[in-house]
Image 1 (spheres, helix red, strand yellow):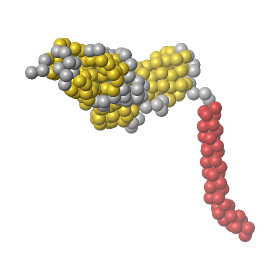
Image 2 (tube, rainbow, N blue to C red):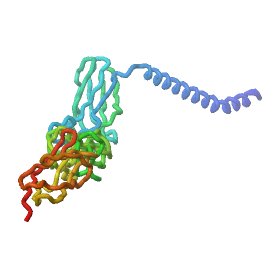
Image 3 (spheres, helix red, strand yellow):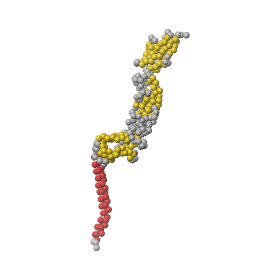
Image 4 (tube, helix red, strand yellow):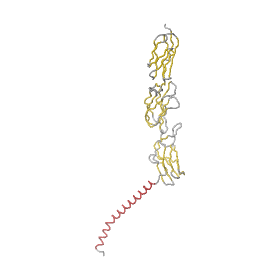
Length: 319
């Protein structure tokens, strides 16, 4: 037979047991959290086995010509020698290609290439597994596989008549444009060396035509995106004329001793003229002169700063 206090002790123990178990569970959880925190902090203190990763920002397996972005390059420094497996993963972290498998590499710079063939357009990253270090690292730098050429719109090309003489008046041809994505725009003018802009989505590109002979040229633009895709055709083809000073018409037939006019196309404020023995200067767009009194063939010359043009003037006898 139990003493009267025995039942009360059992009841107290029964009531205190859940509280004890709860306390033990909390302590266990705190201990686990502390352990996990310690592991995390310890991992933070361990240097990454991969240093200074760098990847190709955009590439195209179908880019034409001497294209440096036909494949994606993945470069980084390997802190210690290891066996590397490198996998390409998509935006859903799903593997799409393995470009190195258990490859033993020494410490130092390493490089891998992925041509992207068979993969759809999109953004990809590289996942590196280091067998010896027992680490798997996703390189955060993104690689964009892009096989679509950019769309180029030419807003305007002007002026259509210019003179690259450095006087600040119509010295250059300017082409304003916009592109559907960041791209380098090239201004073609019939020579082998087009003018090329930095990559951007809109802007202005200028051509001075220095060193070229006066004459007619065709100016047109093309665009090449960061992946190396180029527009299929030249855009905005425009005829422009490089001239310094020009007379029109190209020949004059006039009676002796009469006044006649000839057009002068130039950006110069003033120019010199000569007809037979007579000389002078003018700034007019239409040069008005008296024809020589004696019939014959004469030459009308206009010039400024070493640039000149000349036409024949045929003077006939008065009827």
